[in-house]
Amino acid sequence: MKHPENMRPLFAVCINNADYPAALERHKIYQVLPDEEATRDGDIRVIDESGEDYLYPASFFVVIEVPQEVERAILHAS
Image (cartoon, rainbow, N blue to C red):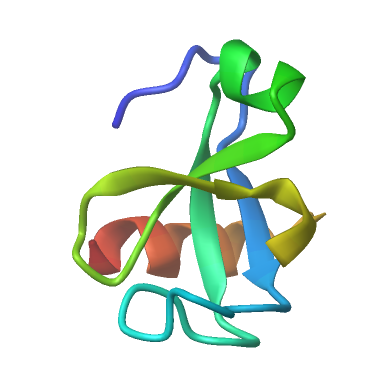
């Protein structure tokens, strides 16, 4: 995924995987994709264990900042 120069990728830690145990791992860092409509609806779009992006309740995640080295490692692993 390409990002504008001034926009860094977002990441979030899963704190609840109720109803989604195969798709989400608690305490794992996931890449967040911008989705204004989802945000307005109380959801968050993340790339889950399937490698695809899906919507989940935003309350299942805490958005975090990661060091650039961690960011590179996550983005290159996918």
